[in-house]
Length: 273
Image (cartoon, rainbow, N blue to C red; front, side, top):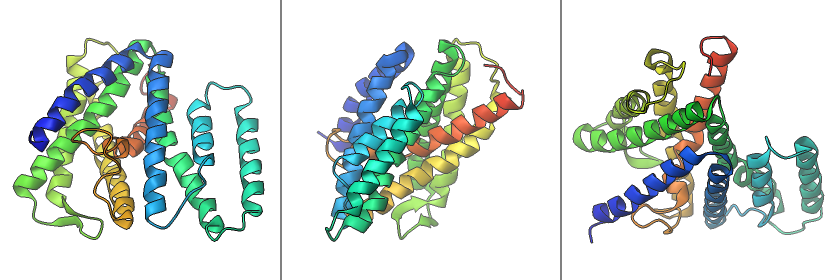
């Protein structure tokens, strides 16, 4: 079986499941996203360990769960401060050679993916259930569209390297092609989904710039970590796709960018959701 066929056979049902759980929303969606977060954290921790920058084995999950549940748990600030105090106290008396490194790597593994996924859940909860669904799917479709157009644009026209020391195959031509893919994904979400919202295509156009820029940056930061770890994929959990970090790397920065923009235009009264 070819690698492309394997990717397609897995991607189609996986995408259908993602869209279905996004439509259901609520805790169906939250639990699904939190599970993905834990898988990504596990892969990040393994990559950091392979690169010579190990993390604490337990606190990244504790921090990550706190982040992803922050909007819905009581005494969220107090719980977060308690986690910080306990972690610092334990690390103070940690006499291993990696103790100083663990102070920073644990927070990265604990915060990076969970914050990105938290903003995706916050997008899903914006406005009415239908509006939240549209915003979430639009974000995902822009990321998918950007990835696809960047891949084929780079393959067809790529000449100038984007970041040769991090990801030698990425080109500026592929990067700019990604903006077209983001536009296609955004237009598909707004015009093909039968959902009425106050978000017009014109008002949403800046999202193309944000997703088309920060999505590839999310991809590059993962590539940087993998290169240091000396691996091609973050894991082999997803047939033909590598790991969860490989599949969601762009979304981890694209979702916060979308969330910030939507919140700002809400606050300034440009849209009511």
